[in-house]
Length: 280
Ligand SMILES: NC(=O)C1=CN([C@@H]2O[C@H](COP(=O)(O)OP(=O)(O)OC[C@H]3O[C@@H](n4cnc5c(N)ncnc54)[C@H](OP(=O)(O)O)[C@@H]3O)[C@@H](O)[C@H]2O)C=CC1
Ligand SMILES: O=C(O)[C@@H]1CCC=N1
Image (tube, rainbow, N blue to C red; front, side):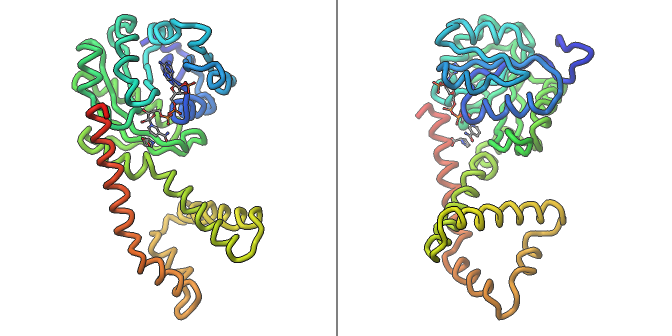
């Protein structure tokens, strides 16, 4: 480790600055914990979008050895490209990693065995599954240690992800299932907001008013859940006046078997993670 005395985190490299890699990098940079963060990205346009204080952003269009250089100078390298691109990227950086450099996966489906098979025994691997609220310090990240990652390696990666939210350590066998809940979860929430907004438009509100009602209701409910520490079942009960209006709406939602819908949706995500593991 080459952590400077005034730095809380080791030097980090993020290879691939898309929705997820970019959100973590920006979230870590915004956390105020001084560290060296290098981010690479294939296109200059997206590299430009990540050029914020605390981040050195490198576009491969302009610096073709950017991944190799970033990998060589970091203690923790986060691989942020699409699952299908992971093997090629690992083969590209493997000769340039210093022994002991921790390589962190954020890729859906791709196994630790795939990482370790390409990187070799001297490179500890940690598999993670974050989510995009990392950008605002509210991620949920699952972490699973590879076969040669030590507790100290895992602790370093935990520290990085704790700067952008909550960390849950799980065995690798549970990472895909966790991904179907928290990895994909923000998309489910945004879909529900979209649908509630559409319902408001259907009641005659203009789209701006509809969005305000739907979005602020979600944000307010989430904040109430967080601040109260109450069970969501109890908070729902408090809204649902006996013989009132909410009771009727909830009855319709329950009749639509939301439990089965969510079970099916998360099963579909799990099946896709297993396809991705096969390189599909
Ligand atoms: N999106 C999410 O909510 C989550 C995503 N993940 C995982 O994160 C990974 C990335 O997904 P996501 O962020 O959605 O995808 P994006 O397409 O948004 O990001 C991938 C980024 O990688 C860049 N890139 C492609 N090839 C290279 C390369 N060789 N070197 C450097 N950069 C490269 C792309 O650049 P350009 O577009 O400029 O060509 C792009 O900006 C995936 O493995 C996914 O499974 C995990 C949890 C949640
Ligand atoms: O959709 C995906 O494949 C990634 C993994 C979890 C969230 N986004």
